[in-house]
Image (cartoon, rainbow, N blue to C red):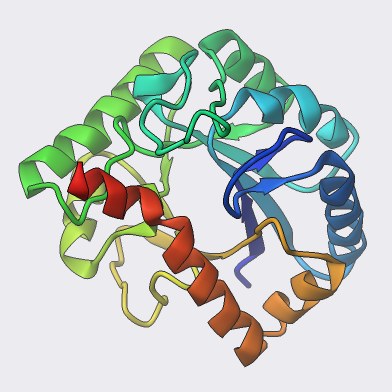
Length: 239
């Protein structure tokens, strides 16, 4: 059976515009509920973008946890601030550096790729997409001295035609958000594809249960939130 994978972005108590930041207190509650669920289900957690707040606020919780965890850094911004994002100054956040990634990996965290530039693949050519995939993988492997086999696309944007590029770049696993595309749509025998449930600011232990149970109202609401959470893509197109 495939694991139930929950994807987060940032965890901090800072003021944040949008839906991708969760307070430390709320994350701990959700994490504890996932620990309980992990006794009867295969649960995994992952963090997109690779913010330093994850290292500072979240990493210690996993020291004695049996839940597998993966972090997906953006290689162009490792050790830098999130200049790729429309952050309105308030949402300015620093990304992990390579030393912090090494510490996480030493503590059994898996490291995946989230691409190099964090630009939506909807607006890039096939050549640009391949270069983004390959550069990220190469940089992570060269700096961390580990194999990088898992990829999750920026903003969740990917389609069946791009799977060959993911494979050609050397990846073996693809993580995609449930509301972006379904496993029935994406298929390739050379690539293991896993659906994820996104977790947003408004989520709670109850909504986590609804996500697992594929509650239709919850899925529609998540689709709506995902649309607005991708405002960066729209604004970048206009600028």
